[in-house]
Structures are given as structure tokens and as C-alpha cells.
Image (cartoon, rainbow, N blue to C red):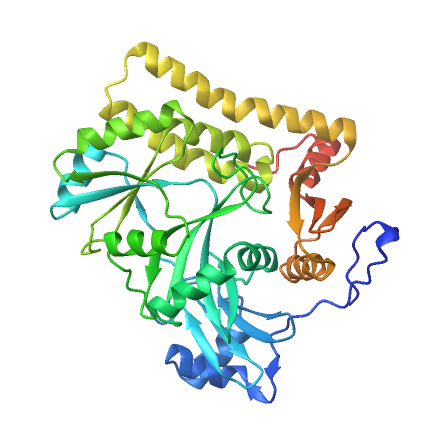
Length: 412
């Protein structure tokens, strides 16, 4: 099946066929047998997983085949990947566990933690696990997919430093962090310290998924010339009010929130977000109501409900936040309808930086394999890089079309 993309003809791109099928083999090595060994399951279950929607089998640069788990399987988290080379050698990269969210700091922090709490900033980007496999740096998204775009930028900017880090902690370790900045295909938020693209580390995991103690990790990352997420405080668990003041400071500067961690990971981390980001997320989601909006609203309203109780908002503060939430819900949604009616379409637009035409082609193929058709609308090539503007279609316009035609709601 030929993939079709609108790419300026002057660049003479030829997009080969989509790759990726459940029946792929690796130079004669059957995936089901690798899955049996990697996940410690029986052959029947492995075959069932490969034929179901619980897994996705993909290729990376014709050198690597990998199986991404789309749900928890046999004690392995969703987002776990089994990465296999042409000889059938494989590596299991465990999915990153979801962090529980706090609604009431005053209740959760003293009850959950043992003694001391490290408060690190929760940055607004996308979760990336970086590994070294066959001397190649690979960047995996939370879903377990090797992202060619993220991998290319990671190699270019931090490749040597990451290899030095893996030499120090072991090549089977996993470096986990947040990619932030405006130049990415997933989550875009402007940070003055990372306006375009950067990577901030918040964990180093051993092959069993056990993280390095915080002080060790922060010191090691700094020594290697990489970047840690900001450390905001070291606090006792009973001093939750100090943590609340930190959140208020983040609120004033429009930052996302915090992750609270035991220094030795004796208990699981917890996260807490600002009112600012709750409203901003709703606003961003409601630009495409039938894609993201309806799933964005209630969880964030819930956070605001208990924040109002814990912080004892005055009537004025409650009205101010109610107005903020209502504005975040309605205004972007109405604007998106108007845009659809005037332009006949609704797409997400973003700019990415590539270092070669091959990197660009690999990313387009990767997106196509995930069922995401991208359209390149412009390219700006210099000696060192290629700046590419792309658009990604949304499902919301189809709902708008039906509603405008029938006048009937697709929801109850």
C-alpha cells in the first residue's frame, strides 16, 4: 500500500510503502518465540498477543524490529518495548509507571511519605526513555514507540554525553526525562530555558525498573553535562505547607507543577499540578473537542474542586477560577467551529527541525505506521538543518460536518 503525503515537488521525495505487520520476522527469528522468552509467557499467549490490539509491531530504519505493549501484560507496564536486532538479539525496555496524582496535599504528603520529600518540577512536555542498543542511541515515547524525530535530535545534541553516561551506569540502564520546547510533534509549551527543544532527566532506571537515588542521579547527570529537571525543595513530609507555597510560585509563572519523591524511592512518587495548567490543558484540548476535549475536562475540574477546598478559596477566588475554567472550555471550542466553517478543515500545525532528509522521511513513515498522516507544507533548508512545517489532521471536523448537516448531537 503506497503512503500518500503532500510534499513540495521540488524536493523530489519518494515515500516507500508502509512497514509494520503482525507477521514480521527478524532474519528467520519468530517474534512469538522472542515474546515468550522476553515476557515469560507461553507460546499460545504470545501468539494471541501478536494477533490482538494489545501489541504493535514496528520497524526502525530497517535495522530494528520492536514490539510495543499497548496495555499491561504479565507484570510489564503498558509502553514496554521488546527491541530486536536482525540477529534476533533483543532487549526489554520496561514501560514507565504512571505516577499517582494528589488532590489534597495536606492529606497525601504526610500519609504517603516516610520522612523526607524531594520536590522536582513537573515540566510540560512528553515522557522519553533513552537507551543504548547495539551502540545506537534510541528514544522511546511513553507508548513504547521509537520516535525517529526525538532519536535524531537526541543523538545530535546529547549523543556523546549519553554514551558516556551509559558507560558509567551500565549499557542496560534507561535514562528517563521530559522533552520540552516548541519544536516537537506531541506537546508544545514555551520554556525560556528551552524555547525550541531540550531534554531534562528525572530518572535513571536499572534493567529491572529500579531508579537511582535522587542525589546520585542529579550529581551524575550534572557531571556528564546533561540536564536535570529543576529541584525545588528538600522538605519534611509534615511540612506540606512549604510544598503548597512552591506550587503557588509555579502558578504565578505559568508552570505545570511538581513531582514529589522519596530520596531513595522507598515509596512511589506523587504529582500535583497548578490551577494555571489545569485551565490551559482544558483550553488546548477544547480546540479539538472530539479528539481530546471531553477527556480533558472532568479530571482537571476535579483537581480544581479539591484545590478550592484545601486552599479555602474565598468567594472571589472561586468565581475567578470558575470564570477561568468556563472560558477555557467554551472559547477555544467556539473558535474551532468558526475556523472549520470558514476554512473547511481543522488541523494541528507545528514546526520540527531535522538534520537530514532521511531523518524527515523516517519520521513521516513512523507517523504513517501509527495511522497518523502528516502533510508537509513548507521546508526551509540550511547547511546544518531542515526546518519543516507540518500539519496533522483531527477527527473533530468530521463531527462538525455531521452536526452541521443533521443538527443532531453525536453525544447523549
